[in-house]
Amino acid sequence: SQQGEEDPQALSIQEGENATMNCSYKTSINNLQWYRQNSGRGLVHLILIRSNEREKHSGRLRVTLDTSKKSSSLLITASRAADTASYFCATDDLGGSARQLTFGSGTQLTVLP
Amino acid sequence: NAGVTQTPKFQVLKTGQSMTLQCAQDMNHNSMYWYRQDPGMGLRLIYYSASEGTTDKGEVPNGYNVSRLNKREFSLRLESAAPSQTSVYFCASAYRGNTEAFFGQGTRLTVV
Image (tube, each protein chain N blue to C red):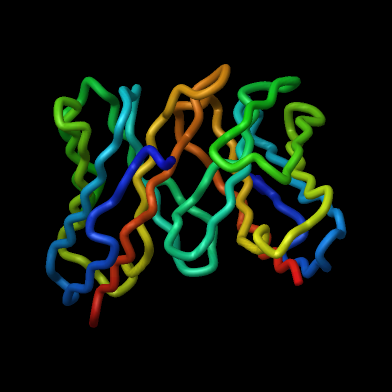
């Protein structure tokens, strides 16, 4: 089964508002990553937070990680119509002989102009 | 740099046909992955390779085989395609299994 689960599944907001997406995972991790996918395209890496970090910023993105609750959140501030996309969290899950990258089911964000 | 290149971009197969999806990366990455993406299911890992010469099963390996031909290339083979394998397939690579991954543009496969 998938390691990460995003919440909500879909989110619709007005341009300029903040968007918050949450991710829960099951097993211990070295790091957690967030990716973005525009419709019909491949995924693009946004940000990586290590297990010993609690918060990380990159431009309008803010990611938090709570390893005790096995959860992370992605905040996009001052959203723009161009932020409309699906957002996925990914964890490095120890499976088989090496760490593998496992994705959640994603949050579909729609930013209305 | 090209990054991760997948071929073909689109493919229609008849049930029972076989085909190989090709993936190549030019970033000298050690880890390579094959995922499938179905509506509402997110990405599910089919197979991955942590280094040249090694491959491991992911969450949904049945019906697929892979080959890590060299450090650059990681192919995915469907020996006898089934309608349940209709999906969008993504190849990805990373320096290591817990670092940033780079994705190809995907292969949209339809099995009729």
